[in-house]
Amino acid sequence: MLSLCDEMESDYGFETARADVDELLAEASPRADLSRADLIVTTQFHSGEVQEIAVRAGRPWIAVSLRTDIYSEIARMLDSTAIYFIVTDDRHALKLDRIFRPVASAHGFRALVIGRGDIDRIPESAPTYISRAARARLTNRRLLARVMPEARTFSLASQRQILTLVVGANMATIEEEP
Image (tube, rainbow, N blue to C red):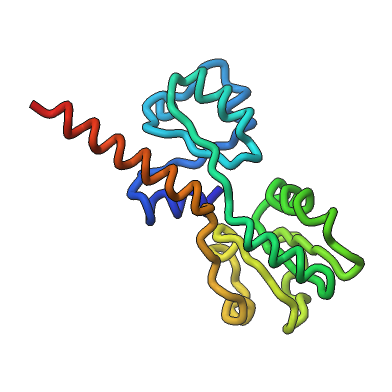
C-alpha cells in the first residue's frame, strides 16, 4: 500500500491517505476524508471491495495493475534459488505467498515480516526484495546496501490511466473557469 501511495504522490502529484479495506467495509458510513477524495485507488486484488466502498462514498475509483515483468522474473528465479521478501505485516506476506507459492519449487519462496522473521539469517548471496514500508523500518544497513532499489510498481496501462484522469480533471477545471 505504501508503494501505491508513494508513487501517486511522487509521480502524479496526489495527496494520499492509506486506508485498510477491511476497516472501511466495517464502517456504517464512509469517513469524511473518503467522501472528499478525488480518487480512490486500489490494486486488482481488492477491486471488488473497493468498488463497493467507492459506491457508498459516491467517489470515483480505479483498480491499478502492477508490472508483471517483476513477478515473471521472480517466478523464473524461484526455479533455481530461494528468494526472500521482507515486508512489514502478515497480510502482505500472505498476498505474496498466494502469488508465488504455486510457482515456488523446493528452493522457494520466503516471506519474512520485520520483527518476527530472522532477517539477519538471509544468506549474503540470496536475492532479496524489500517493500518500501520495510525499507523505512529496516535497521540492517548491510542488507539495505546489497539489495537493488525498489522499482516502480504501476503497469504501463495503469500509468496511462492515471495520467488520463489527471489531465481530464485539469482540463475540466480549466473549462469551468470564467
